[in-house]
Length: 179
Image 1 (cartoon, helix red, strand yellow):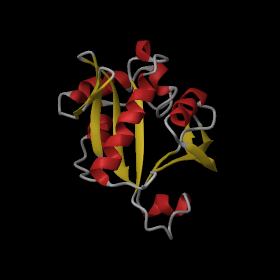
Image 2 (cartoon, one colour):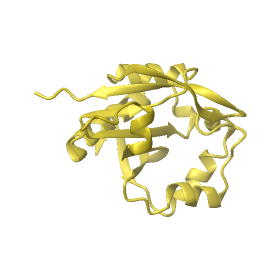
Image 3 (tube, helix red, strand yellow):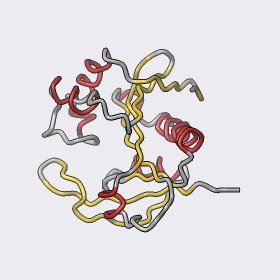
């Protein structure tokens, strides 16, 4: 899967060391998991190599260089309750991503990555909605998601623990246009 020289490659065992590098970098952790929560090799293995078949996990490649990570998954009952989708029969997927190489930030790669992943989720999983829940202060991520067609639909107060406190998040939703 390629577009604009971005490729998604299934996560493989050797990627755990790259993930460890990224998830111990304070610049990356500021936006993903928190600078007070660096990963260990054990935590990388437990978080990304746990055998969860519901999650689809990829390394993001740009010009033959691994630069980030993305995953998508059907949202579970707990999320359906929190997001107020309990009564919906829609196929709803969530996604999480980060660019682990800061020199690739602010170059439009995140927009390409999110658009590419939206297409894949719709085609492969027949999703009718895709959701994200960025922290409200993460304006760069929110702008990226809005450029890709996501809309803010609900404030999630104190939704995510980050750097010593619960932070507010936005529930953002991409609704598939069925024609």
